[in-house]
Structure formats: C-alpha cells, structure tokens
Length: 94
Image (cartoon, rainbow, N blue to C red):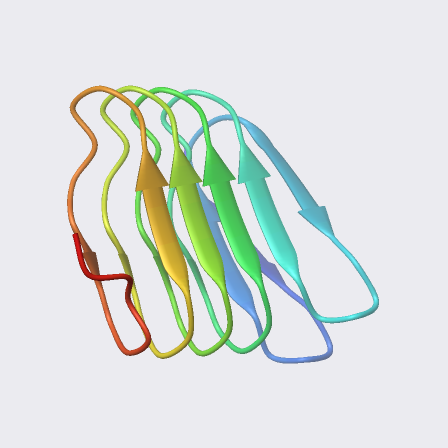
C-alpha cells in the first residue's frame, strides 16, 4: 500500500512500510526496513536495511546494510556493508 504524506514546507515522502516522522523545522526522517526516499530542503536521514536514497540540499546520511546513495549539495555520508556511493559537493576525498 502506498502512502503519501505532505507537510507545510512542501516535503513529500512516499513509503510502503516503516515509520515517517516530520518536524516543524522541515527535516524529514524515515526509519525502518524498506523505507522509501525523502526529498527536499533541510537535513534528511534514512536508517535501516534496504533504505532508499535521500536527495536535496543540506546534510544527508544513509546508514545500514544495503542502504542506497545520498546525493546533493552539502555533506553526505553512507556507512555500512553494501552501502552505495555518496555524490555531491564538499565530499571528503578518500
């Protein structure tokens, strides 16, 4: 089942399972297995196995096995076994 949630700041998050949490500051977080992407301004984090990408300006992190990429301006980190690449400006050089 597909659930669509919209906040006043214009952040949309699509998910099939997991927990969605929205804060007044405009940040969005998605926690749980199989969670989908969060896109928009402000910080966004996706944590858990099989979590999808977070895209947008500001810092973004994806942590956990099988986590997907985080892309956008600002710092981004991807940590865990099987995690994908992090692409954007201000990235640390390996």
